[in-house]
Image 1: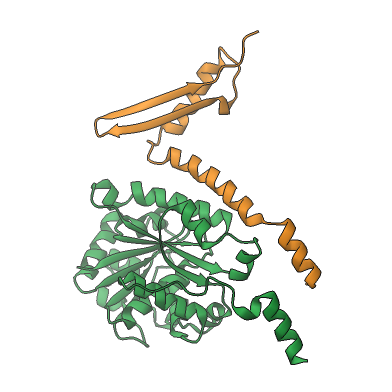
Image 2: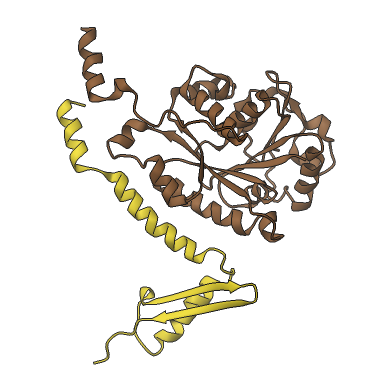
Length: 86
Length: 274
C-alpha cells in the first residue's frame, strides 16, 4: 500500500461508523423483542393479517409492543399508521 | 462454593475456546483451583488447545451417564497442578446434555473447585444453553465486527431470560465483554469498530481487550494456552483480563497503535534501515 492509498482510505471509507449505526438500529430492534413470550412474533403477524383484511398496510406501519409494568400487569401496545383515505 | 463462569458468544470462531483455555490457566496460575469444561458435544477442541488430546479417556457425557466418575474423567494439566480439564464427548447425540445431568456434575465440581469455566459451543442450541444455564458470571467474547456484536447481544438476551438465575429470579448473571482480535491500527483508520463503540452498543462492563496476534495461532499449534506466552501481547492481555476478573484494577493495554505502526514510525522504520 502506497502512502497515497493511506490518505485516500482515511478520507473516504470510515466503514466503522457505518457499522456502528447499523448495529445500534438492529440491537434496539432485538431488545424490543427481548423477554417477550415465544408466541409473540406469531401473534404480531396474525394481528397484521387481520388488519390487512380491511386496510392495505405494510409491516412497518404496525408496531406491537409488550411492556411489563410490574409483576401483575403487562400492557400490549398496538400502533397502526393508517394510510390516508381518498 | 465455586464461581461458575461461561465463556460464550453466539457466533462461532470469535475465540471462545482460546479464551476459555487462557482464562482457566490464568486463574489456576493465580492459585485458584480451576476446572475448564468443554460443552461442545460432538466437536470437542478444548483438549487440543490445552494440549491434552492424547490423554482423553472418559468425557463429560460419560460422567453424566454414570459410565465414569469425575476422577476418572478429569485430566490434570501438565503445566499447572491447580488446573483440570473435562473434555467433551464426540457423540453425535445432540441431547446428551440434560439440565439434571449437567447440574449434578457442576454441583459435584463446586465442592472441590474455586472456579468452573464452561467453554460454550457456538449457536443457541442445547449445548450453548446448558453452558450458560448455571452461570454466575458470563464472559461474552466478541470480535469488533457486525455479526459478532449482533450475536453477542442475542446471547445477552438469553443470559437474562433463559438462565437459572433468571428463571429463579435470583441476582442476574454478571455480564462482561471480552473484545478479541482487536486491531488498533484498523480502528484508527476507521475500518474497525473501536472498544468504546462496542461497549456503547452492548452496554456491558469491559473485562478485557485481546489484540489480534500471531501468538494465538502459534499457541494453538503447540497446544499451549496463549496466556503461557508472556512475551506476546495477547498473553499479557489475557493475564490482565484474569486479574480484572479477580477484582484487580488493571489499565487496558494494547488498544492504541504502537508507535512503529504510525505513519511517522512507518517512515522512520523504512528509512532508517536503508
